[in-house]
Length: 269
Image 1 (cartoon, one colour):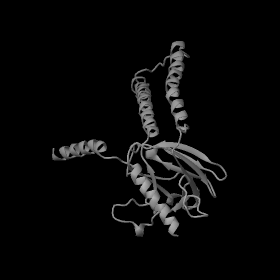
Image 2 (cartoon, helix red, strand yellow; image 1 turned 120 degrees about the vertical axis):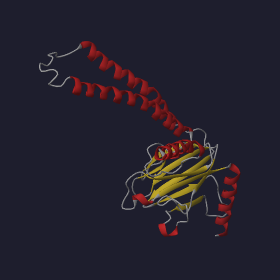
Image 3 (tube, helix red, strand yellow; image 1 turned 180 degrees about the vertical axis):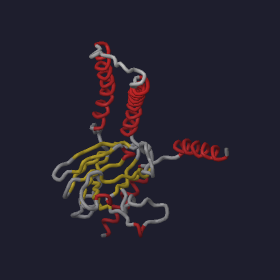
Image 4 (tube, one colour; image 1 turned 45 degrees about the vertical axis):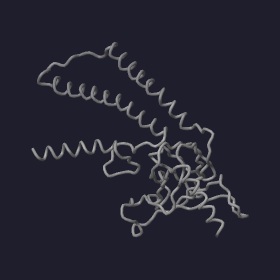
């Protein structure tokens, strides 16, 4: 009895805990999505939940048919099998019904795909370049006053295990985070300097291929502050699993202060 109460309490606390705190990094045995921070990811999550409704119905119905055939139409109960070759009404149903379901799925799917490709008057442009095995970032909208320095850029490497602080995520922390403001339309340009990479941050609903010699772009609009973790999602060599991504969303005031500090640091070099 005590064990049942303990398990029930654990499940209840875990259920309500998902509403009390955000999950912006992967966790052990995670089955669902990370908490969305952009309208795109909210749309992806909603679309997944709607599709799951149809999947559950189809799985339950087909499982019911399978077990019914196995248990009610076995050889001992029906020594003489039925001899029918086709059923026109049944064939019409199993042709039309899946077609209708696919049409219901296609409409929101195409709408979501087109919205993911929409770039809405960006206020900030972030350039991302993938390398073996780290990321380079460039804030080309903010120029330094020094001659010869055209933009703010830096490299981002994974922090090794021996340098991690207490509470940090292993294989996910980096030495230089990407800072971006909330409630701002941001355009992200992605490319690679050597081989194929993929810049992916689940909480942002972003996964953009980084191809050498080609620029791919995506637009994001973060609705809340937080620290969002991602990783390279394209096999790019022996250290593919060791080039994480960390995006931190802050208020516009904090963002401007950070940009000014970075530019002042560039001037002093």
